[in-house]
Length: 213
Ligand code: ITT
Image (cartoon, rainbow, N blue to C red):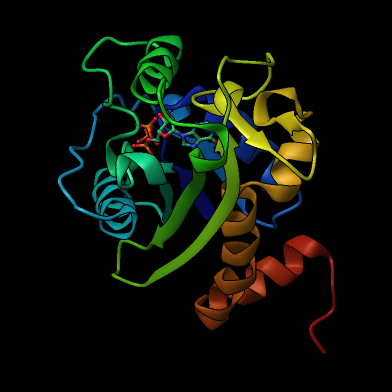
C-alpha cells in the first residue's frame, strides 16, 4: 500500500520521516508527487481541519492520505492561536514573526499564568471513504524569550518544565517521544492496521516478512 503524507510544512515532513520509519507501507510526500495545491482550512477545530485536508488530498492523489492539523493553545489568550496557529501573524509571516507576536501579546502575563499546550489531530482517509483519526497533546509554558534551534514553529517559546528545556532545545528524537504529533502518530500507527482490507493487511504482512499462519 502507498500512503501519502500530505503536508507542505517541512518541519512536519522531517518529523514524520522518523515517526513513520519501519511502517510496512510505501510512504510518499506531496513534493514527490508534484502536488502543489493548498487546501483551505475552514474548520473550527483541529479535528475538522485534519479531516478536510486528508479528504481533499486523498481525492487529488487517489491514495490513502495522512494529514495532521496542529497548533498551540495559550490559556491566557483564551486558546489562541489554536487552529489559526499557522496564519496567526498574517500571510507571508515567518515562524520568528509568529513567535514574536505571541510573546508581545503575553508581555504582561506572569510566568505561572503562561500555561499552554500543543495539540495535534491526525486523520488518515482512503479514497473509498474509510477514515481514522487520533489525537495527541503536550502541556507546557510560554517563555519570555525564544531558546533553541531545533524543531519549527513555536518550539523555541514552548517550555517543558519536566525537561527544563524548550521544545527547540530537545533533539528530534526527544521531541518525537513526547510531542503532540508523536503521540497522535503512534496512536494512528496502531489504528491503521484495524481498518485495512484483508488484501491490504496481507500485503503488509508480506512486506514485514512474517508468515500469517
Ligand atoms: P500543512 O497544513 O501543510 O500540514 P501547516 O503549517 O499549515 O502545514 P497546520 O495548519 O496544521 O499546518 O498549522 C500548524 C501550525 O502550528 C504550524 O505552522 C506551527 O506554527 C504550529 N505547530 C504545529 N505543530 C508544531 C510543532 O510541533 N512545533 C511548533 N509549532 C507547531
